[in-house]
Picture 1: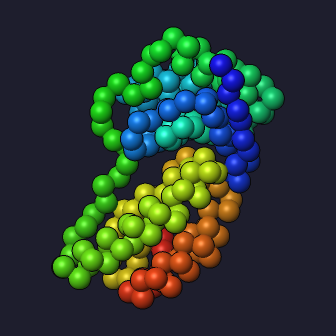
Picture 2 (picture 1 turned 135 degrees about the vertical axis):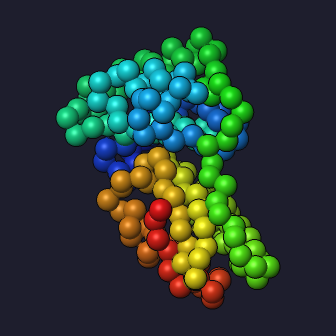
Picture 3 (picture 1 turned 90 degrees about the vertical axis):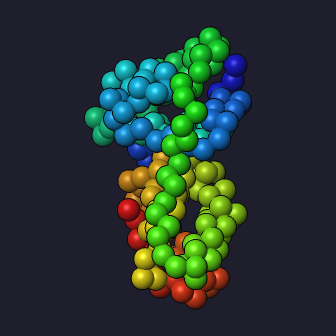
Length: 186
């Protein structure tokens, strides 16, 4: 098994591509070992000293490290563990729960139409690009012209995430959906 690695815009996060499907649908984001019980893979990765966060995407795994550890030390351990996990055919996730946030869609019919438009733009234009960098952006809510988004994976804590939100996503949404006045992280 050959596992590729890619750097992400977040220097504390590396993207690991095992060459096979990781998550059949949805994503899973674990920001602590005690929250990873439903993923044998994430639980194992958290046993490596220096691993701070695990994000599972459709065909990739992003691992965020603590500041105390360096990639030359962590990377071989992570690669070995991922290889062992997939070679033993153990499940990545134990239940069918999708970790994707459903979002709060309270509001009138007009808001429902706007929310549908926002979600479609996020799904077709934003999420594929963000996934290439090892992350995900999930719609949370739309209130009083403000779109609230939850950033996951390499996007969470990334130095360029504010620029991505404000200059990229906000400008695009404001262009296509005039009712949007601002985008904020959750």
